[in-house]
Length: 431
Image (cartoon, rainbow, N blue to C red):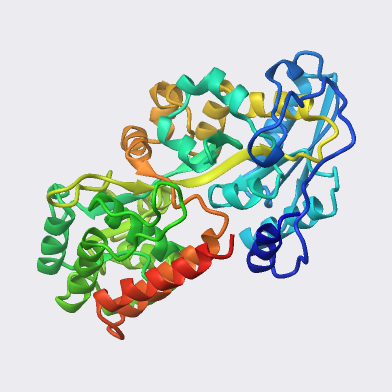
């Protein structure tokens, strides 16, 4: 194994001592290995679905809503030659990742399909733990909202199939403002004149997302196009961070926002303490029941950054196939069903999921179940992926730690970005 890959494994996954190549000794159920891709990765064969049979294990986090098991039950009923089963990992995202990593490192074939968070793509792909799904995805590309492929792409290859997506909304109190202003600058101005704006400002992944939504809209970037250089210390990123810092200083956002994650921000809005809220679509359901917001709020895709453009940040998960799978053909057939229009539509209507498929948002049942379907589709379309890098955890930490210090007044916005730049450059040197 190359020395740089060994160093990367030690940095990203401290509990592991080395990274494996994920090669297995053979395939069954129709096969699936048609060649080699980046760093020798296996390439999925779309034709392997045709005669697939046998067992498939779908690994993922706890099935809180029941959507995973519902999909499995329907798939098994329609495909008696294949038996799919769910293996639930702990609810914590970090634990889900660790469970998958441990199996891949041990070359275990227990997981055929994994429910992979959008931020894990490069980390897994560089270890040769994932099938290159490009041949399959390209056959269906027009069915998906194009932006969702960013989360599954690394070094020009697609390593997963978008399964669930997500994008943030700007919620606003209609008893206090008529509409959302056209720019973020105007939102902050109006927030300062009303009860303010709440968002996720604590030092964690949520702040990385919130900052990048403004930074990308302002025209900023985090990494160079080849992913090898840091570009955080830029005028565009500074404009975005300065807007956030000034917002706290002039009262547009409460000082407590530096401690807010999703739930404290939601509660502030639903208690009537703020006029605007940046949060995910799940808040729509709870806000319709809260006394202060029931019948008194609306949602909108994010406004533009003055003089620049619009941007959001994608959440969600992709379905990936482990290179240790002994049945990649059946695994692909399972993914094909789980990302079908029928299955995706039922997941949205019955389980309030967000789909990466274009056609789902035009379904009358979806529009009835999710009155904000049109806004959600627009939000996903204008959203971007977080940096797809094998060292994304370090990149994110450099962003949220330093941005939080700037929001808290410990350092200037300029100093925060310079320090973040230094830390990202250091992380990039490890692979």
